[in-house]
Length: 195
Image (tube, rainbow, N blue to C red; front, side):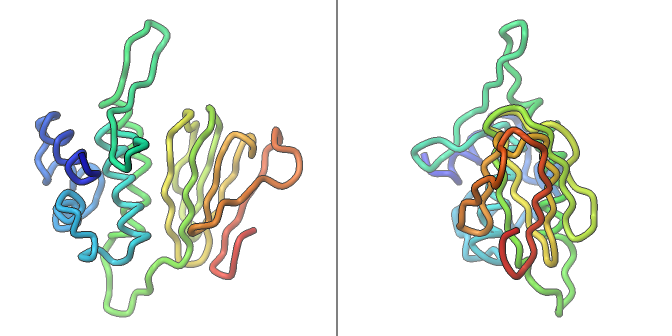
């Protein structure tokens, strides 16, 4: 299945309407329809489409699969049970809200597009605190495999408990940790380039 088909199938399997997903992620219904139909040219830019796609997938409890689509997330807990939808609609929706607001929030005619696109993937459990354009974003632990797609106009700052526990992309470029990878680090991305 394609990414858009995976999103639609999972949303329908959960019995959620587009309106319910739009309210949970703060992504407009027209953009959700474009993601499911894979008419991404209707979105602002390819980077915004990718960020929105990841945010919606996470809110539905999906993770990227190797075939370019998505698969249901399964996170083992102490009792051997799995929690996918709770992870998706609870935690990931909370993570997606700041991203969706910055990407798809109210727009005036002269509002510039986000210039700073940062993608963070946790390799293992790690504390990550995010500030985008001076506004507090995600605060807490990312579990291994969880992602944050961040978009800002002036600055995206990450305070990471262990910089070696994350993979960071600034635009399309991977940013490798500098210094000791088992140490806390503050990474600041500005429109002019990486930290």
